[in-house]
Image 1 (cartoon, rainbow, N blue to C red):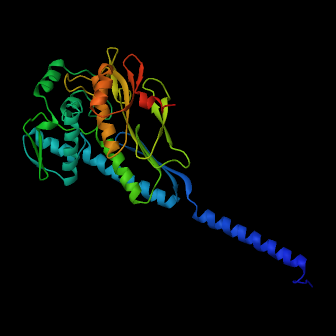
Image 2 (image 1 turned 30 degrees about the horizontal axis):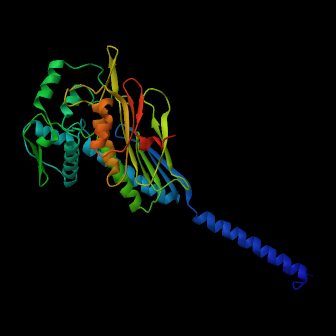
Image 3 (image 1 turned 60 degrees about the vertical axis):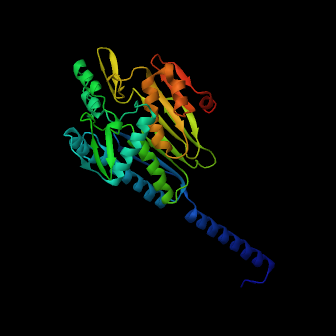
Length: 345
């Protein structure tokens, strides 16, 4: 028979109680502690999308990422330029010189894109959807054929611009029947900003959203910032890596994702609206922005820098209020702003 009041038994009981309490605390911490990293991938906007959430319980992270991907799918089907969508139906009406009623959401996005286009001096020009289609980029696979130069000149002569678009009480029309809208240079950036709002609404504090190289950061990755790679335009792997701080976004325009080759030349999907021909002065341009609508602005405003070429890169960036950029010109030379160079690895 054991003596429960003996010092030996009292010590054993206390040790057992401490061990039981320790395992109880471990169980409680395991039940309450968040998963370190939850990642979800999908294919939207014709590119790979990846959402990474840090420091949230897996169920919460999965619910948040599911809501983000549902939003992306909605935007994809709203803004698709050549498959049935709200935008393609609007384009059909514009081509006939008719007025069309659109959703308040689409009207707001068109107004926003119009302002960004004017800010860029019309180098970011979503009204040249007809030219983009002529070059064969309104297809999942480019046509690999250079259009007739007379046809190109005909589109340029009509000068379709976002300023030709009238938006009033959710009714849209244009004085110029050549206006055909393509928001491919806007949609991914808008999706980044929407993703951040959705993640925050689901209580997510730390996340990284990557849409084919257009990236935005929310919070950080544990004790360190989110680190992202910037794609090399001619080689496998990265040109550089960069630590993104909370609320920062990068947008990249390049000639290496959607392009075709003919006669020994590369023709990319970024069209210079002044000439009607694909831009040739750059291999890639990446810009870093922060603040309100950083995702949208980084997507749209990287296009003018890419189109205008290396000679005007610094001046054009300054005029657009862009301090941080990394570019590779047509000859493969890397150019970077001093402020961004200090942060690149």
